[in-house]
Image (cartoon, rainbow, N blue to C red):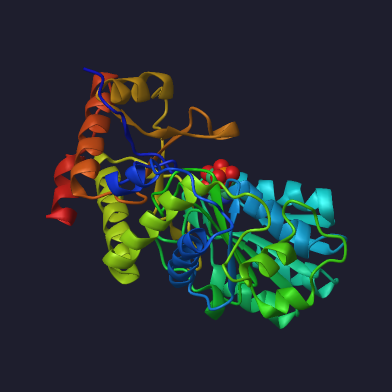
Length: 376
Ligand SMILES: Cc1ncc(COP(=O)(O)O)c(C=O)c1O
């Protein structure tokens, strides 16, 4: 019997049955009231997850399409300050280099951002700030509210990647002054990959670039969304919209507060296990930065081999993530996103603990027991 693997990744994540079945429907006309209603449901729920009353659109494309849409529409030919402490901060910097005059404000992956350097760049005339709220590559949660405050003080636009926080952790796009915020469908929303939600403030619209991209032209999205029925400018990935609508209805049923509390508790259980093992969490946080509640990054102790540990876990049917780029072999990452609850967490921690021991390493204490104490 072929068994499905349990994906405990920082996206994609397992999809509830209702979400999977929603994709099996017959094709519909995307220029129809039926599609308009699907799109409207997605937008309504995503606005609550973003904490915004701004315009919000759904793009057929992964999270990176949302990042590119943000920069290409609002950063072209502008002076852009890019805060970087991980892979996705780097990605926003690379995109910004394509479209504007980008300056990287760089910290080591998983270490606090240099907000003094941000102030300096803004004083020197930066007009746009980019930030990854939840830096998935390093398991660190960056101070979006503080960055929003600084950006506003200098009258800069604030573009925020909330790709792995929206729908799983506290995001207050409006209160934080995030002029543009982005989510990816395959992360905390527990929908299939391939869609990105993007919100746009009035302040951002006032500063829309003159030569926008074609496919990702957000003014075209705005025009189509204002139509009756509500539409997208080009043919959307309709089956993915069906699935996203279902995922959004599930979020609405659970309620954002409960959903956030659940994500926080699952991450807390993983951190309790890591502490009990005597292992170190990878990020170096300070008073302004926090551990991510949607992905926990753990440093391998000296000598422990990623290519030995994770295959043992996979043999037990569970997939966790390794490190990316220069962190390959140095860290492992356990995602706590989407529909995740105690059984998945406990199975993952038990399998990980077993793999650690099997590769000849000792743990100080019982991580599974420590997690049970958080979850029980
Ligand atoms: C924080 C963050 N931003 C952006 C992305 C890119 O999203 P996608 O792979 O959907 O293009 C990811 C993907 O892991 C991410 O974690």
